[in-house]
Image (cartoon, rainbow over the protein chains, first blue to last red):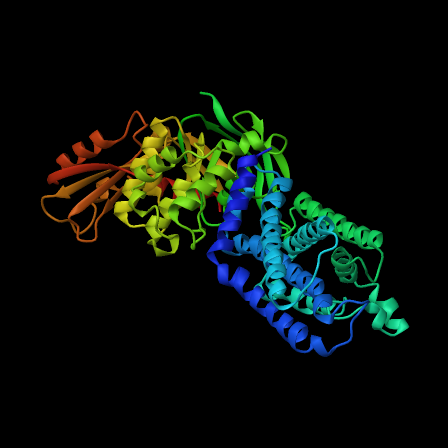
Length: 253
Length: 308
């Protein structure tokens, strides 16, 4: 295994993260904090408790997950798209490094960034909203699993996109709506019966539900189903990435 | 001499249907400087990109130091350094970071002293903390060379290395390439500057329309295909060539002051002595004479022209 190669890719990507600290950390932390201030502290105090949890505390897992999803996709897609766009991908393709090692380097760095961001957001949320974490190990597990899975998804988008517009297309038109409609701000039990069933087709529901369970021990869907669906999505992404490297799709002529 | 790169039956057809390479066979000898010449779209870059792993071949086998580029890609690629045609660099990074990144990517442990030496050899050491975006085009080209050398390759591909660089830098690069060859690195370069190949290469390969049409030692090639010319500066200008000289490969310059005789230096009878005798008989005197051999560029144009 080319461990020096993986390390080089990982550190190079992380270097970009530290170089663009405001865009990478400050911007998502500030925008998520605004949600905590408006929906948690200001409006949340006047809203009814959900499943015995204050509204401000209820939205913490969902909003953290929203930031992790969008940042994982953004970090990973940008990470692999930029070398393709600038032409520097030639070096990665000509290096003695396997497809798996390339994925570990790029996706590992993108997931690391998201995990760091998620932990900072959780720490910031504590300033505005009091909350507890009932199952911290599961919380970290879901955080890592989600970051890795959606970084892989972002990696696929970065390989598929042939322009900056496409790079933004899926996150803006698919992921953000799915996250908002996936129970970030409400319990799906609050929806009419038909919409409750339709919502179950939204994969983000399972991520938020599982993550929220790790905080409060209560969730819209069972822990096993949440974990299973996340793993299914992870395996699907791995399969697509494997196919891309095998065929050279958008990478090699 | 032992081959370091062996290409056998290599073909490449792109998805568009364009056939860039047609059953190419090529052996590159260890330690030589090999110049690959060809017009635009001849298949030079495709050939290099396949050997380096950037483009998938359609058919054929490529071995680098005995290692198959597909089955044993790690061993094959770790021996190769590539300087691409385009100035593709991460412009926001510093010279030092981008070169150490390349070394790590190719599986080598960090070695600050070696990277420093590479930068020093390329006159980049004082720029090591500069962001690449602040460097000139020539300096960026040096950074690409430093990146390609960072993992101590045995084979260095230079795809149009001096395109767009000034004469001084070009000569510096020639010196650097010769220095690398002295250290045992095999160099394969593609170039549009025939002068570059003429100055540096040990052997020349000519590729046209995806086919290798010639591989030859440079000296042998120039001897074999090079025509010689004898130019006579006449004492008194002539209005036209005398009829006694008709039928010979002889031309008169527009001003009538020079007579140019083209001959094949390889022939036993070049005809030079006979021509000089005839001129003496005709009373045509000359004040100076000079011989010249056709350049590699003329040979190249003639070769490619004959195939189109």
